[in-house]
Length: 231
Image (cartoon, rainbow, N blue to C red; front, side, top):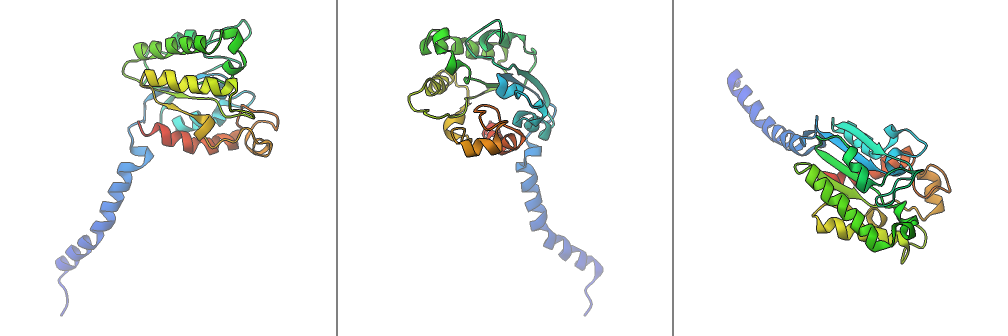
C-alpha cells in the first residue's frame, strides 16, 4: 500500500526535529551568538598590548574583537607601567586611563610586567597597591555600565618570592577588592615564559620574556576568550 504524499511529508518533518533542535542549541551557545557584535572594547596596557615590534593585528585581543565583530581600541604603550610615570615611557596607567574614549562596553587592562622592575621607584608594593586602587576605582566610576577585566604579567624564572610574584599577587588582591575579574596569567595562562625552548617558539625572540609572537597570541587567545566569555 502506497503512503500518501502528505503523510510522507509529515514523517520526514518529524525525523528532522532532533537535528533542528540540536542546531538551535549550538547556535545559542556559539561565540557568534553572545551579543558582542558592535560593542566597543578598549585594551590599555604596556608592550603586551602595543605588541612591541610586531603589528597590533597579531595580538590575541585584536583577534578576539575581530572574531566577535567588536569595535577595537588599543591604548598600549611600550615600557608603560600601572603605577610608575616617566619621561621616556609616559604617564602611568592609573593616570592616563582618563584619556580613553568615554563610551566603552568592555575594558581590558594588561600590566604589571614593568612595575615589577620598578618597585623601588614606585615606593614599594604598598604604593603600587595604592596606585592600582586609584586605577580600579577610576575605571569603575568612569565606566559604571562597562565590564572591566585585568590580566597579569606572565611567569618568569625564579618567580617564587620575586617582585614579579609580589606584583601579580597585589593585582589579584586589589582587583578582588573592587570585584573586578582578573586572570592570573602567571599561574594559569599556559604560557611557559621561564622556558627557553618555549620562548623560541611562541615569543618574539629567544631572549624575550614578555612579548608573544603571532603563534603565541593564537595559543593564548583560547585561554583569554574562555575567561572573558564567562562574563
